[in-house]
Length: 203
Image 1: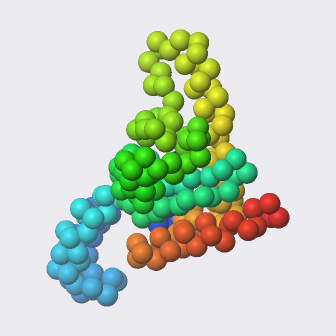
Image 2: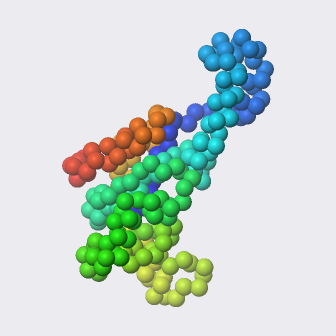
Image 3: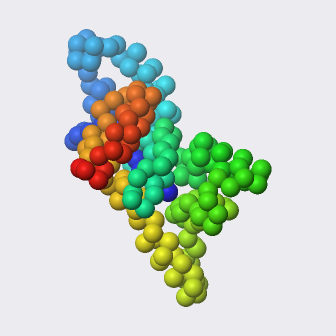
């Protein structure tokens, strides 16, 4: 179990501080001729959009959406969930996902959503639960058993990284989705996940 991100637009070389340092030098007529919008309307749109856009800026500094996925050892996607902004913590995405709600509801009713003695594996960003195993946090004080567990956990969980790599290799447009409508982007990502399934082993 892990997450991947999809960026919105292809990154191009940009002039630093363009809005603050360049746009003020346009005359009213030049601005409208160049951008087909009045300066007043532009300023109003920027003011409204900044809080919204900043939510999608991930820790690497570019806008993205989160794709949470679960796969088996083949690796084949078993569950996908997409749409949260790139700045949101993985644990929060999980807590709000249908997977978490179903697993938690089943656990409270003492119904086993997963076969006996089987669990999902997640990285250290996720919370430990009866159905989700995460690695020990390593602050330099782990014993040999804990280190061995972390190694086995990591080497087993690598299948999700393989699955994400294969998905992005097959559908390269996922790296830079040239859309601005969030719902449309989510549909594209989930459609790629669905289309990817039958062709994984056949190429």
